[in-house]
Image (cartoon, rainbow, N blue to C red; front, side, top):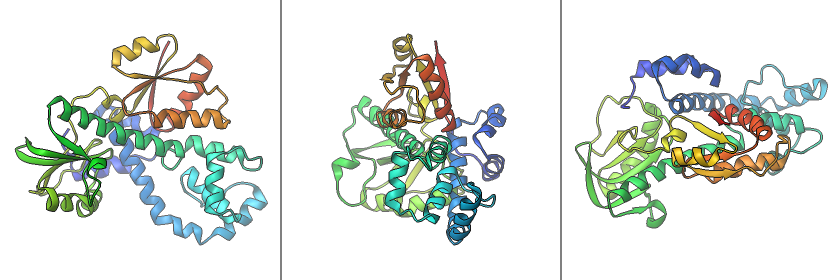
Length: 326
């Protein structure tokens, strides 16, 4: 996939209000990861615009909560951000709020916290970990490609100085008719504003230090009017990998007795679920976090029938398509 046009992008963006809206775009064969990335960026932009307005009305939030035990209708934020605003209005500091989100078994706010954690696909700790997992898979795909070609390279961690790309090639290669010295992986969709932000902070400095490079926006990008001589951008179509099932298609497999067969079929790892089926428990919650933390390749979740029912509910809320094998 090359980029999409500006008008096409804004049409998609206007039409996306929730995960349920993905269904209307199946005819156009847009990858689920692209739609999800556009949606969460839309949500984040909304929060950036309105958050300080709501912080200025903390007293109103507190009074409404104490009187009705619910959020005021005008507090239109993603679930986790609504909870943060509420707890802030009630006098909780950042450390206390973070503790409640890590261990939600608080008598007064338990139901409120669980609901937010399992429904917020932007700011929930689960959502954040799943995004990190996508980032790791993107880097893994590139690492596998470079190793398969026998190329000599260093990772960002190995360079350890100054502004460093995800991969620096000790000897440049030719891709897209350009001599490539470095590769940067981004598990997101880039509109022009986001691309300009990263160009200023990362790509242009990389060019000054290392020469021209390649930027991979795994979830696509808006076509740019001009081409840069500093770097070329791609959606990663040239890097074949089964791991794109997780990264681009946002599919997660759950199986019970057939877990090993599914694993062999998709060349995937296996994550054995040992965290029970009680959703409102830190054990179940932290099990989901551990699943995403374990990912640098796709992994089949091996779980029983009762566990699968609740896992599927949470993972679907996080934007994933969940395929259950008997």
